[in-house]
Length: 263
Image (cartoon, rainbow, N blue to C red; front, side, top):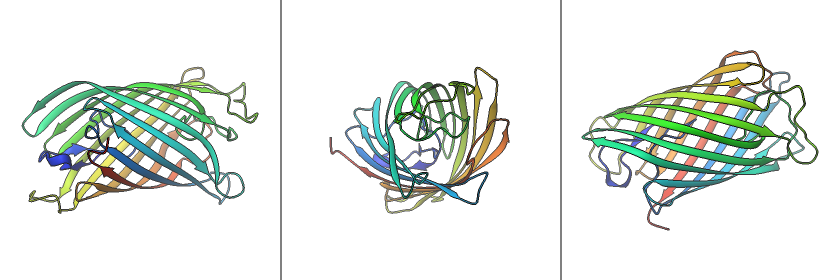
């Protein structure tokens, strides 16, 4: 997730990417409430694949951040619950200068899911039971932020008898590169100014057993109100794939609100 805002009294920008986490954390002792709405076009039908992911985030301290999330989708009749996930990120390196910083973090995610396995793509954030282990490096250069992520992903059988087919890979390496720039305000005057950020992210997966892969691109606009409420509007588009993906293209609309000093 990429963008920049003057959060928690820091005049320099803070990166907040849309499709990937930055190496920076939310402010210590704060809580975030996030609602992600995915509206993706089914490849084989005219059906819109809708996924809803509510999320609670906690800034334990300036190094550790925890998330808990739920997974809902319309693949069954109506909107049904499919699983839960937890995420932890630990920032272990930081080099801060005037109007710039470089940070590195390690992260882990574990998820459960009871939905049917209908694609070769591995997604433990909403589709597959499994886990992720990875690293993030983020460079902020005044109004420009660059970030790279790489992680290992392991999928297991889903619950309710929705087993992973034996001919599908269950291990993958995922990667992303994110870049974005603060467009507004041109000159910082105070918290009441709306921040607008433009970004683009490249994301890919390579499966270890069979070498199948995909690469996506996702341009995004992000708005931050009073350094506390954030709205993301993004479009994800497949550039290349030789694996089965049920709904690779579509829109993401996310709303997030940050509560300071509540822990």
